Length: 282
Ligand code: IPD
Ligand code: CA
Ligand code: CA
Ligand code: CA
Image: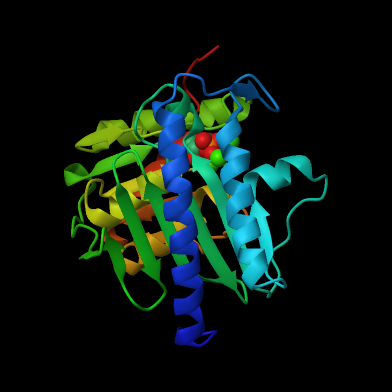
């Protein structure tokens, strides 16, 4: 491993405590009728007062113990004008609320998601949905856990037996919109079922515990997937780039699947979908 296990265990304990504390705050926000929401870059880009609050608690809590650690957090990135770069330094990749739209609509599918990268390798991930009290956690090389019990991805190898999580991001861009409708058409025609949870982090965790067999999404941000990617890999699953090649945490276009066989079939279906030219969507 890139860092000693003892050190990682200390990081893990610290982040778990911070996330549990933030979970209580998030759940209060979920139950409150007064939570304020506003839009950021566009009408569909929503943020609540809780997003910033939670991210600040996590960043401050880690900085106090480890002043040299770096952060890539959704809300601090939204404020900063400089694009985040991943270095070899310990870097906490934080989504204070993944699934803010669900949070706003009182759909209990949202979470706090954190991944830690050291020497550009993810070493731990925690994803916590406080509304359902579901905590997913993993340390690289040590398995994945759901509320303390070890979890494993399904052994499904045939897309026809797979339930696939799918999401359409960035619908304002026509090229991306067309790409997604072709892909969802192709995938939904070949899977047992498709589901949209509204949280990328939870979707990856659902593959990790066998609720889903696969998940596909393009055009996300590092914080959406860092925590969930570690958890899925540690549950025996596979995370690749949408092309089937190596997954890039800073530019997450990805397929998360329970098995390599399933990954390959989804890669092929996506290629077929992308080559469809005979369609009309205006
Ligand atoms: C969103 C969720 C969602 C995905 C969106 C993301 P946010 O994150 O991950 O699953 O489809 O593209 O923006 O804004 O709720 O943290
Ligand atoms: Ca957001
Ligand atoms: Ca997110
Ligand atoms: Ca968020």
